[in-house]
Length: 400
Length: 133
Image (cartoon, rainbow over all chains, first blue to last red; front, side, top):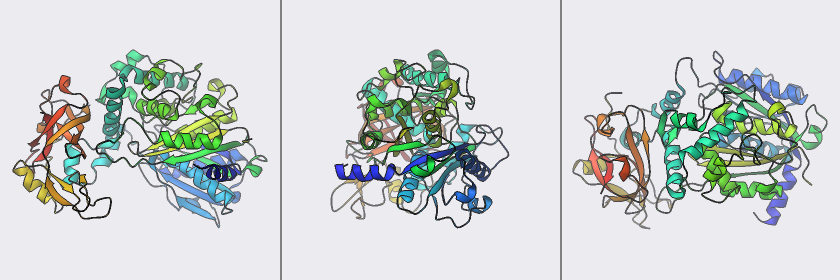
């Protein structure tokens, strides 16, 4: 970005703040639709901010695997004369995109108080998470090249990330045990998070002996699937300061969609959109990795955390395995990462998992797992098979 | 899982005609000469693509081993419990994600030379798999 572009972006971001957060019961919660979860999350976030629903004038929707979060949500909540209503979709990068679009809308005078909501209810009682994601990939009744791709292993997220992880391991010597160190560190954080689904501590040996899903990914390299909803209220910084919760300011925000060529010279698996997105967002914020106090990194797989931290510059390219194994990502480490347990151990609601924990940490509301007075909280989103990346830099302080 | 087979459609018919006689067809832009995998519909410059025979030689980019019942026995490893698939870089440049067959784990490495070998899941069309050259 040019200096002029950075200044323009900052002038927009400094006008807004995150003022409310609502998290429904999440996990193996049955008998409710995605729309049910979305409505509850919005009500909860608005109440958390100390606002009434009548003060909401913008609503940005995000759907997960199950779909079902629709425009009828407006009527269900009794919202009248909204000035902004839209669905945003970039898979795991959606949540940060929603925040960016909300900020733009508020800075442009389109709306003053925008609720960003994501909800999903793909889990059915007695059906495995893996078969739910695979089922979605196979549901199309493939013919022709689509059928040939299916036979070639193009189905479900696990397979694509297994190929990405393997390439990184081959090129840089990254090991399965180093990936395991990420699962172990996140579980240690999850043990202190009452909302986390998996709270029993694990060891590298547990990781190594967990069953293969798709080699090189063990079960404990993979996130869970959850039902639930999360909503975030974005409003003007001025208004946020007068509301119920400590404002969380947005210092930097960026997206990068690499558009991998999947041909000779392609760096799929080695370098991700985090490289450009991260340097752009941190540039906007005027910080580098050394100034970041907490990382909330999209962790659909352990590998995703490792490669994202590399691309964000917390270590050199190819050194992510050593960083993971150093113990610095866990409680007491110098780079506290996924302090709620992440998607691996707490709950999986796409980009809302890291974003929600970032808001909790920035507000200082993390209780037993709270990182001491964080000033810079880095958040990532990642969607598709590394196809979509987004970065957010949050802070409890106004950007100077 | 039983009964999986690949059924052709209009767009894939030339590919499967060639596959049934052992030739790997890929796509090429007649204007800029760029090569694409068989499923590509247009060149990035917007041009229609033509079919061209690929050499069938490739190098391995990455691979994975699925621990789940294969869609068809021809996709399974010798243990019958796993199946291998990978990304190969065709000599012409495009990558294809393909089944890997007749390959032991110790042969799998980035950059290993691979060769196309057609397999036929069920009673459908022959599809392109790769094996060490």
